[in-house]
Length: 170
Image (cartoon, rainbow, N blue to C red; front, side, top):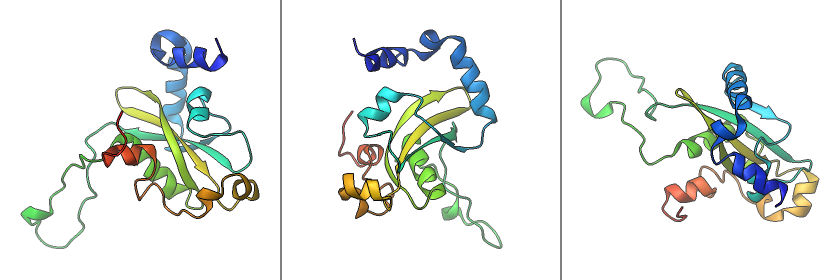
């Protein structure tokens, strides 16, 4: 078996597979900022299968989300609140898509390639988002298709976006 298969098996049941390392990671990650840039992916097998390469121009960001009902922003207005302008839940978006959008907003010069689940506890969910610097010379040479695209995540072109649009089934 290859190394990637062993990593994949660990993440089928991470609490049993990783043991104390799992608890230590979650304690450490809770104290970190919401968007944390990391040097290398936590799940190398998943990152490589989604297009990550250990080359300049690729960025990995661990994005933390609060596990609550995903709601629209509160309407800021003077006077009374009309009945039609209340906060409604955003049901058509997954946590993964919201994480990709937030990472893209934080790193505005990069394009979102893809993302994957890393961990969750009772309060938070963590996703690692693979970002690509489209203006980097090595990316322009090896991935010319992404240099012409802008705001892929907002147009629903990532895997999570395509899944929410009903194009990609899983």
